[in-house]
Image (cartoon, rainbow, N blue to C red; front, top):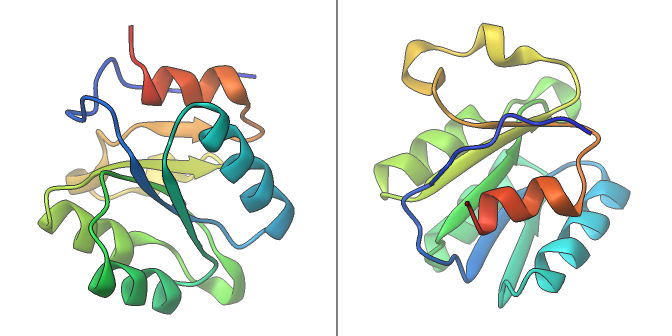
Length: 127
């Protein structure tokens, strides 16, 4: 499994993660992996509306955002909101859309699907 991961996200040790993922199996698997990595709280949203509602009620340390969601949605509005709030973000994708990202998101790390424990660990605990 390959991924583009940062050496640091500016988060010493994230404890509350927003996971935006429309595939329930991937979301559950990623949640389990994050909890195994010591994340205290993982909140899952399958849509932009769900994610923005969570952001309105909670503070997050890290956002892991599936770039392309169902019904033609993308997670860019969530990314914009998290970045405006000073939250580190990582995109996840199986389609290689990173070439289509605007310049403002061109340097955001991209997890390549399928990703696993080691890929997430590099994000949570950079070397």
